Picture 1 (cartoon, rainbow, N blue to C red):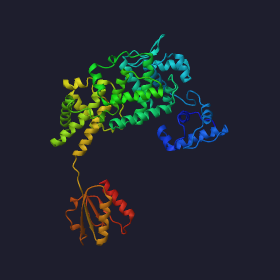
Picture 2 (picture 1 turned 60 degrees about the vertical axis):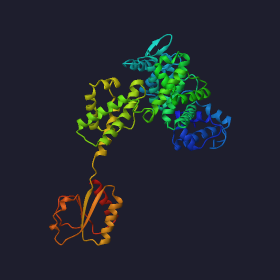
Picture 3 (picture 1 turned 90 degrees about the horizontal axis):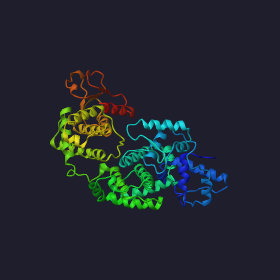
Picture 4 (picture 1 turned 180 degrees about the vertical axis):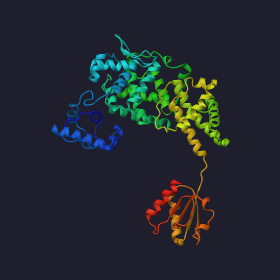
Length: 494
């Protein structure tokens, strides 16, 4: 049985870094795959071993060298039986020539993707239609971009972030590296980065960000070896350099550089370490306690102006305490926005709730702030649509917190015995998530004499002779679970 897909290649390369086969759960965590997929890959590997008349791989047992030799001999250096669409090919080309660590020509891209020359030309022509980062070809350097070095580093990092969502394309990119590095080694090094980050400043960094960070460090270091960065002044101002070197994140990068040297035999230059410090800051920028109100008084003033204009646009009102809390929330969110504008770092936002009404309110408020010199200086190009959506989420959540919670007034008019009334009351109390007031009355001989029924939100009764305009829940002749479920649904709908 021949299995040659990208996951299987990653699995075998991962085995080559292990002395003993880890547990299925450990492999699933480190390879970012499901346990079911690991069982399938393990079965596929054992099928290969059976065909070679070798013993099977068993968790918690040593992996023999002859087993690895049999498994790796059938693997090619590039993914096979995989299909890249034009977007993925263009993304790989875009990433490679952002920081080219060797000369890239049309024939190189033909060989990499196994496509025709015309296909590569079409991909390159699409990239040339962009306003920035248009591919340029020279006989000396091959394909490259002519943007400043800082912009190229940011562009490469953002592309590697996007590649995480295209596993096949990511495998192709990894196989372009001069050093043939297994994906599993990137996983192991990224795990060490996560532990460094957690132990040093007690913060979490996601698997996604850690792997992107490790991939970028390797590719940027390869580029730096071919095109050495002369000094940190090419990337940052002197004041920024002093600020970064005082940060704890810079010490983490120093330790991480040693890990990269040990595992990939690559040295990380000081200019790259400073850039990596900036990116590490941006990974968890919203939780960064370094950004205080004292450091960002201008953002505090702008946040107060935005909140005041928003209240005028929406005609909302609240207590002074709530208003100050909202200003702090807005200022906290504007900090990473300002950081992104100043340093052009990552601007990928996930898990956003869409509320067009509040987004329109925020846009109206920002339009009124456009004439303020402070807003123009802090955000010369305005705020991105995704950032407006985040601000809208904050204002929307604030509006929900200001809404008064109204209790549901329930009237029960019944001739049921006391124990049945108590049962209904207990069912409502224990199975209803809304606030309510329950009034219980005895069913009179002449139901139509009740005059205040319309003051309630719901009527519960077994009588069909009561005439009212409010919702009415008619109790069946026999109380059972289906009746209780129906009552719960009625109250929830109210």
